[in-house]
Length: 163
Image (cartoon, rainbow, N blue to C red; front, side):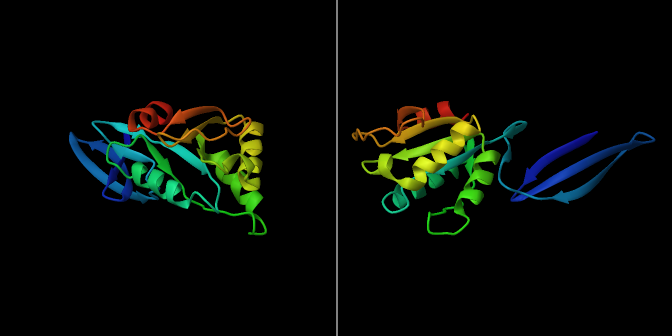
């Protein structure tokens, strides 16, 4: 029998071996990326890529990352925070988008014009990723074409779209 669990911040692969009715636990350390948690069983967290206007929306991105750290969060975020001034940012962004389960655009007034966001949306569409746009409550910014449905930022909406 083979079992993977999270203990603290360490992901352990546990091999249970039966020999003459005695069980031996052999622990094999593995990497931990925060994408598996213990909640009465093993639950894989949804891996999220965040696309946002690097010049204007850093606070919104940081708030979503805080939400992902909640104990009851069904999603995890691999924050790579690239901007289009980094020479190979498109290659790194594409690799990160390939590894995500859901692509989320953080939507504010300038997002629909942000060059990096538009390129990342194009990549997510090419990779056929599930995608949606997250706007703050009380705001109604212009949507980004091809980035999916616009959803109001509320915890129940995050849980619905990212579970």
